[in-house]
Image 1: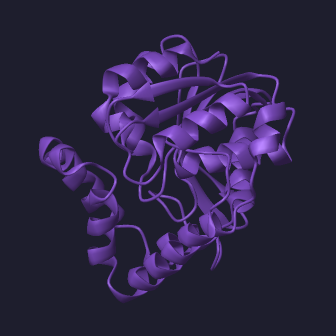
Image 2: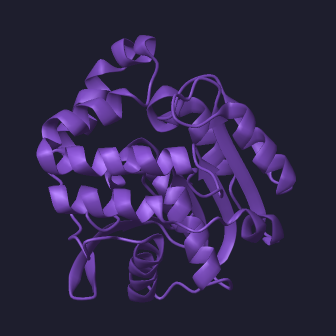
Image 3: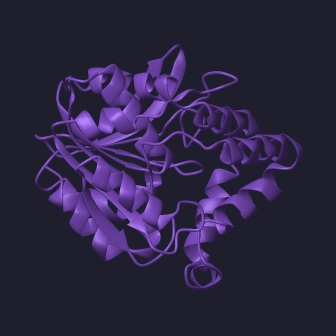
Length: 256
């Protein structure tokens, strides 16, 4: 299924009926990361999985895809489906987009679940890393994709989940360099939404991995506490939908 936003194709899937749950993937991912969860979830509710701009089967919007651009693309899908109220679960970048969606369209989200994500903006050190990543994408996309995805797990889990990671890499290599670059630049300049998340009155869930190589577990736990959010700690890295499938399934079923 697809709709358009700014004359650009936005691909999505929709299964089930009632009480919509929107699932948003992370950077270098697509809607396929949710495939092991959607059928079961759709027995009791409508489940919408969206390819964010520049990822999966969606087109690329701009030279820089801001989180606001992506949030409005999500809104175009919800408009297509006549959805006026929904819960959101976002992995990594998908969490950033969920928060920006709440910022722009505050009357739509019922629940917000951040999986390996944070409401905080990039640190100055992280922004420097983003710039290096963006340059590498344009120089050697294959090397960047391989390195970026491998760096999201511990060495042990890279071996344990090698086949799943290879599928992710193969799929990500199909994304345009421009789309990957645009997402990196958009994440770099995203707004700090810690206060927004703290003020959100709906159900709030923050999930973090104790061995996440790119997001500090204790920092995320502290942010969740400051924002009065339910915090769930998992034992592995950044790709909880692969590394901790059982726990993620329970979390997704727990969302209102």
